[in-house]
Length: 155
Image (cartoon, rainbow, N blue to C red):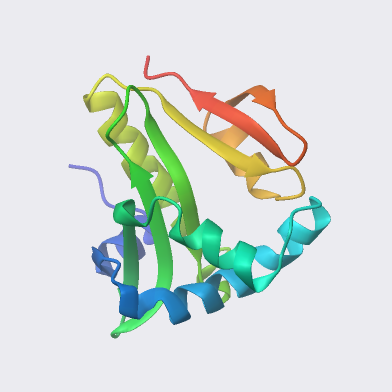
């Protein structure tokens, strides 16, 4: 078996658990730190109510990523429909740039392919994560005023 990349090792070291209502304040702070600029630059409402609504949308699919019992990430991954959907992926600023987001996405893509499912996501037009998604093989299949709609076929 090949050795894990440093990013995959980091991903494996993080604890994961289902998000709870008690996590909402920390997850809002994470969202603020990681998404506010991209949202504002994409013309999306960044009011507290809007931030909370986006966080709570699909919350039943949310997993928190923990490092030393501190929330350092959020994954909202929906496996319930015809496609596997990346609803949200956020990594704390201090862990960005180490390939962690890519490692988490690759893990999810592997699961989707094993299930014979495409992976879809929406990315804010001003979010540089679009480049990562394209490098992983996602293609833009549509857009709205604020987001690109992307798909990665399972084959």
